[in-house]
Amino acid sequence: MKPTCIGFNTQPYAIIVWHFEKSRSKTICYSEAELQSALARYNTPGDLYYQVPHNVHYFNKVAIPA
Image (cartoon, rainbow, N blue to C red; front, side, top):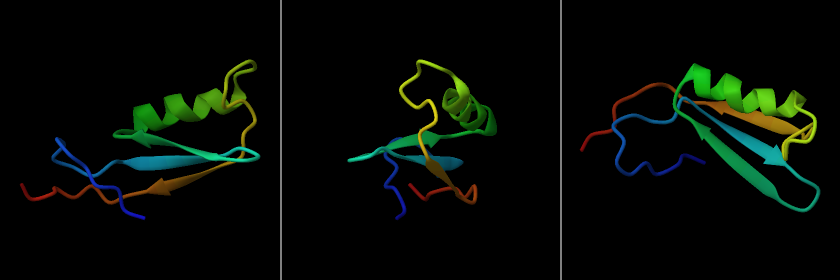
């Protein structure tokens, strides 16, 4: 599913979908640095996303016409 971006001139770099037992959560990243920072939470004990299964969906960096 492609997100609708409002106020940005590019698509997200990637979206992480976190799969909890009864729900899902999404993290939208606009750069590789943001992606790596968000994925580091998977290995941080005590963090909400610690050891939560997840999928990463990458996007092509394409300008969205105004």
